[in-house]
Image 1: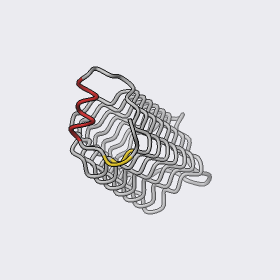
Image 2: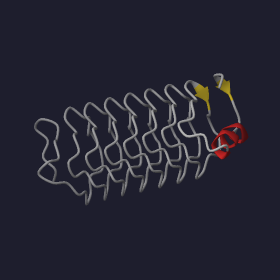
Image 3: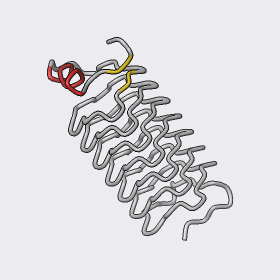
Image 4: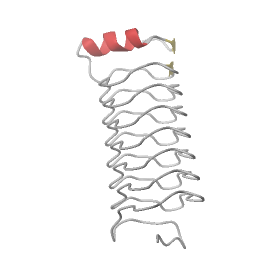
Length: 172
């Protein structure tokens, strides 16, 4: 598929063909309504998904490195084992999203809503979580080394002895 602006209809047509691992690298999908779409193993590197509605979308094992997902609705989306390293997820709604074992190294999650999210064994090292809402999130086994947790809401989080925190940080 060529890069550039495509429609939700175009994306859904690819999915309906049963094509797994669809390639949409650098595609402009900003603002599209892709609720509930199955994009398992999709190639979305450097794609623009800002403001897109991906509520309940299946993005397991998707490659979203350096994708722009600022302000996207990813509520209840499944991003297990997805590569979101260097992605911009600022102000994104990831409430109740499944991010188990995802790669979020160097991701920008400033102001994101991650309340109730499943972040078990997720790599958040060097991520920017400034002002993010992580209340009731499960951070068991997560790697948060060198992450920016300034002004992050961490009420009622779940973590364990395997959770790695930034140097000097102690959860309350």
